[in-house]
Length: 389
Ligand SMILES: [Zn+2]
Ligand SMILES: [Zn+2]
Image (cartoon, rainbow, N blue to C red; front, side, top):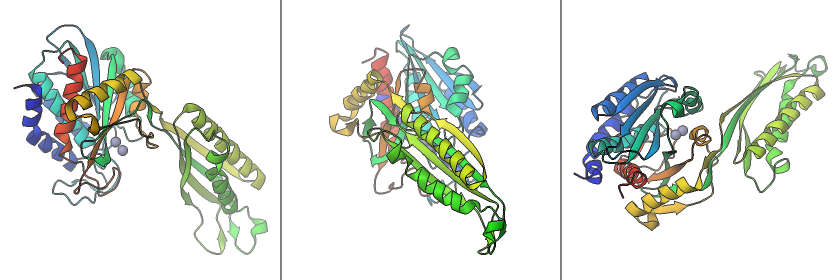
């Protein structure tokens, strides 16, 4: 059986794996059940398996039988999201408040399908590393694997990742350069002095300051960053006060900054810090700012983007490949791996009549019809990069 036939023959099993992952989702760095299942399957395919890389990460290695060649890293994610599922599927999450609403269950299953097909026909020149990373959803799983020596222990010459998206089923979307934004997270607490609503002069009300601050922050992308460099600042939460006639002593604002280059990101962060400090100072309040940068820009290298484009055109035809649409302002922590090795993170459309919800929507479910498409693309990419085609 050639490898593509092996991928097609694995469809039922990939679907079974995917739905089992879906029914038992685990949060970042707690994916011990998922990781154990992935490791067991990879051992069953005959791969060398290392567990516990960067916490719960798993790396499975296939050594080609045709001697030296490139080492190709292919990444999928183990973690689910802290949100309640509302997909109504039979394989719906069995865990309250946790669900595979980003489709990582499908990414794992399609990579496992590719691993099995490649392991069954290992006459390639080079090495394939199947990298299953923990905690992609903002908890720093990619950085944890890198800190644990990912690319020293498991050398890779080039790395790739795929993510589902709401484009039509089977559409392959590839960017040269930035494909997803850096995403920072901030939380601001303004503290004053509570009091009676009738006597504001005896209190220090943080609410008006929070309102002015919110308006100032929301307008920053239009004023401090270069208009030709996309950047977003969103305040997504504001909490303070309970009673109509009482002045609260604190208010909390939380939000995110997104940008496609480091300069725009850093400019917005600096401006935010200035505004928080100045507003607090002007109003006689104290301000606390927690600021985190869990996602770097996900920047593809041109040559590796071209390899994905070539493999996808080869398999599915030119019309199925979209090249260089505007990048996403969402984020992807594969960006940290791409900062260390050349590679490409590309998108796979999964939209059809039964799959309209975008990822992170409680109704989202991964489209199982994408499994053979994604696994076939992984296999063809490896074949092209290891001297088979
Ligand atoms: Zn996600
Ligand atoms: Zn995701």
